[in-house]
Image (tube, rainbow, N blue to C red; front, top):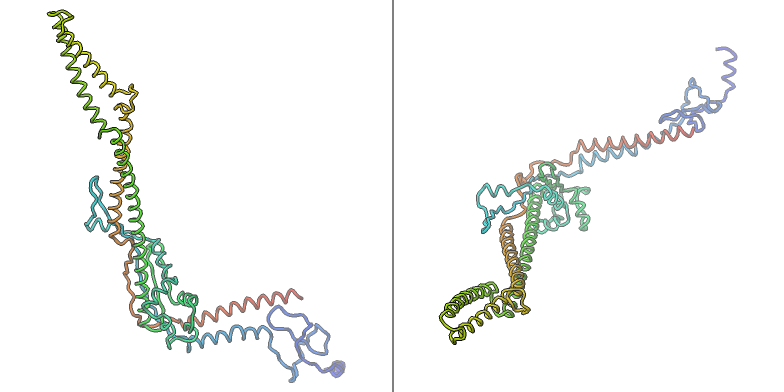
Amino acid sequence: MSDIETKARDAAPEAKLGFASGSPRRSGWVARLRVAGLPDGVADPGVAAPARARWRPSGYLTSFLALVVLPALAAAVYFAAVASDEYVAESRFAVHSLAADTVTSPTQTKKATTSSSLMAGISAATEDSYLVAAYVRSRACIDEVSRTVDLKAIYRRPEADFVSRLEANASPEALVKYWDRMVTSYVDPPSGIVTVTVSAFRRDDALAVSQAILAAAEKMANEISARARADIIKLADAEVASAEERVVGSLGLLRDFREKAGFIDPKMQAESLTRTLETLIEQRIKLQTDVQVSSRAMSPEAPTIATMKSRLDQIDLQIAIEKEKLTSKSADPGALANLLPAYESLLVRNTFAEKLYGMAADGLERARLRAEAQTIYLNVFVPPAIPQEALYPERISSSALIAVALLVLWGIGALTAALVEDHKL
């Protein structure tokens, strides 16, 4: 070493190592070091750090330990040693609608009893499947299930850990939220099959809750069917009552007409008058013939001929009166020609009312036949069974998933902070 270098080294103040707050920063997570006593912004890599230099961790390392390592370790400890086992009971069913298959003829309606006709009435009800699945997740289902099983006791078993256990004094709203976590329902769109899974901390509890849910769903479907049947029958009864009122009203009008006219049927009265008129015409023709024959043998002033002519005049008058009753030229409102249009109108109205009544009565009978069948029912083809081993929690995968999620979130935050620091330079 030369004398110049030796003097320079002896003249330089003692170097101290520390974090440079005002020196340029490298894009990254570790701050650059500077040598105390040298100009700002100048670092001497050849100078070794003295023994008294103090190392301080960066903010990135501290946040990594606090936000990633410690929560991941806590989650791993929880899933490994604290989390309680959860047993799952699964059931699958399809919702079908069964309409009463009927055979209708012009004079008779009867219920089909053949197996083919009954199978033809069965159809999958996808909309009803979604309805049942929504009911399973509702508070109404919780209330119905609570009548047969004690849900609060089931989900506060000693086997449940403090995180998974239901609150001691859980409100109905809190119970619904807890229910949504422990009970799930899924509908397969193409087939409409509903899958219901129930989690519990004991095998028997999972099976009991699952069976209670199926019973509640079946009861709900029956209630919907009963309401639908009641609505159908109520509507049919209303139609029958309305048609019956029409028939009674038309019959009342006919009765009033007959009492006012003085006879039952104007048509029959017209036929009777026609027969009387025909008889009078025949008598007139015969009497006119007798007058002509007698006029040849007797004087026109003979009493016999006068009597015959007088009788002929009476027959002509009677014929004119009878004809006037049968024509619309008469000023008498009681004439048959004036009564027939009103009577026919009333008769048509009565006939129409009777036909409507018959159709309404037939519809009521068909509604009763449909009401005999269950409109909606659950076809459980995978009944719940007692679980043999716990499916949840997935201890290893859940721990790893939480660690990865925390690492990703911390990495996003750290990268954002580094970009902000770079923009401040």
